[in-house]
Amino acid sequence: MMNKSVKEFLDSVAAKTPTPGGGSVAALAGAISCSLAEMVCNLTIGKKKYASVEEEMKEMAEKMAKARQQFLQLVEEDAKAFDEVMKAYKEGGDAQAALKKASQVPYETASQCISIMNDLRVIAEKGNKNSITDAGVAALIAKAAFHSALLNVKINLKYIEDKEYKQDVEKEMKEMKEEMERKFNEVIDIVEKWL
Amino acid sequence: MMNKSVKEFLDSVAAKTPTPGGGSVAALAGAISCSLAEMVCNLTIGKKKYASVEEEMKEMAEKMAKARQQFLQLVEEDAKAFDEVMKAYKEGGDAQAALKKASQVPYETASQCISIMNDLRVIAEKGNKNSITDAGVAALIAKAAFHSALLNVKINLKYIEDKEYKQDVEKEMKEMKEEMERKFNEVIDIVEKWL
Image (cartoon, rainbow over all chains, first blue to last red; front, side, top):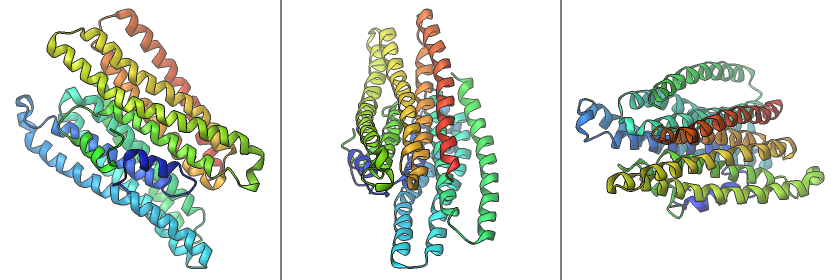
């Protein structure tokens, strides 16, 4: 899917088929955030003024590149997981198992967004200040990706019958939301200081 | 830029060059939101259950397709406007004029995001309820696009000397933020009702 042109990919989102849909878009937003974060690192590396954080920025750039690849995989996995749910309903397969899988993919996307928000704090704090708004945009997009992913977890939970599973995931989501809010605010506070 | 593959585009964001950067990403997020909104319309059109909103959904689909194209243009314009600022500083051109232009492009992105948030409310309210989370994701991404664009307006304002211009834009941004918050909440309230 990611070898399509941006234009073609957007066409396939807009098309009269449910996939790629919101779950894939959430993961793609995560990937976009990582790319922007990596740019900030790359614009910091090699600058005399930032020599003291050079090693850390190199590590962060690598981490962001890796996280981007994981998000891009989640773009594909989300579409697949949704298609499996549809198939299970149509062909009388194990819809409950398919729904659980379809809830786990966006859950993974949401977890990844929290993880990169930690890194974005470091990047905003120590990276090139000429790119501070880019770090801010990366944080805004990652937060939107997070909440988008959670909407996709929730809609799958709605149809899952296993009450214990539902309760567990709902509890985790509540904690994740609090963590995201806290971490996002840390990044934005740094960004606003420089505007 | 949009004829590149998604992978290549993300590479060009991540690269050691400031463009495409946060301003282009903001506009791209707007385009992604429109694509998803159009999908919801397309999954509503032709369904018996939604026959009463068929015409409205067709209009909305067209509107979203048009808005997407405008956002895609802003992706390119943002990179160009930033490059012009850099050029003006390096070559002793009119940096103030270039900065104003560079603040107007993301301002336009932010305005567009408010405009589509109105449409997203209609789409969430009247569109296919099987796609309600997609409408929600579209709203989340459009809101992030909006705030991302405003960060890019702000960073340019920082270097603009024309105090009246700055004050005007700051006042408008404050009003836009309130409007966005109100409109976004309207969409999300509809989405949550169906989850």
